[in-house]
Length: 254
Length: 254
Image (cartoon, rainbow over the protein chains, first blue to last red):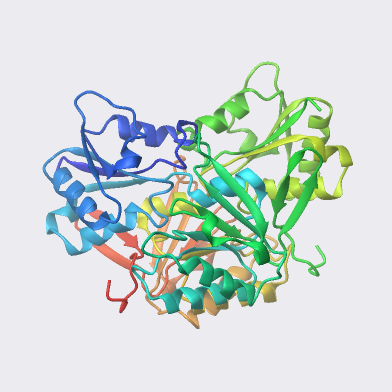
């Protein structure tokens, strides 16, 4: 088997946050696979084929990339953010487990990237500075009841919570329900951060409190961070406030 | 205020995983602050001063960097991994909130990096492919009871769990206790991954099952990922197994 598959994290989208390791994997590939808008972020190179696919076709896309690699090509499959966080790396593993035996012999590398919650957190301060959870709000692949159970568990134990895949045309009500659920556990003043397209020309960051949050401010590319009871807002004259979760918990004496 | 402070994530340590944005922030700084071994990873440059400090002096280090920036210098404070995840960004915010009023007027930027759990996950497959939590096991800044409560909540709701700061000379028993706690909730076969120094010459990755785990295999630079009940191991002939958590949950019909 001479072929290989690299699953490459593009980070939040600016070339300034693409690691040299990821850039090298893209540069050396014979073929690039990925969701169209992500592929469009990769500079063109001669003698490299491009195979864009639609959103929500992760399994088929992963299988196509594996099939191509098994023919001896060096294939790069691009992923937004980090491929291991609600992205293509798990889809590739699923295909390897259930697909052609020969795919188990392939050289497969996962190349990490800056995942959305790190990029959004960095823009506002350090909201993930203490224990946190990452939850996908998509109930396409898991029952909504499990998502509610996890929101309860996370907020009940006062984790900061990062919400991926908050909303889509096919999933319009889930985010509102999730905020309702979180209000049972968290103070009305808990800071909520909406961030999208960090480092790109259309970057947007919005901060509000849990009681005033408007789910319609999110789209499918938005990453949301919900602070814990400990998360704090530092007002700054003439500058955006800093939002952070202290390293020590109140009453711990530290 | 002409000075500035950048809190820069070095990622797991190889220059191949340092983002161009982070490299530029280090390159353009007048002064570098950080834990000694992290500073040693930054290439030397003329006309740039270096201010190494010991581990566990985060507050004092952040204050020194802010004081220097307030004098008009461009200061970079380096952090391993991502500065927002159990690292320097929260320490800086704490100092800004409680310290000199003038620090609130400073231009402060957080430059994200590849945090350890993403680097370790990428090495073995996609263990963070579904909902997950990140918990620091250090009880220096929070009570051990809260850590146990969070371990119970996370494992009880079947999150994958990334453990930061698992062990140190001053905290020898906590990791063993944490595994005991997790065994109450998780199957004995749940995969556990120990990873350290990913991408560096002394990289180490170790995989075992929860019932066979040996806490003494970890040191203070180790990041541990504990799989959920859904996390799977794909055996591969002649290659290391792939470990991943599927995007869909069993019984969700997807």
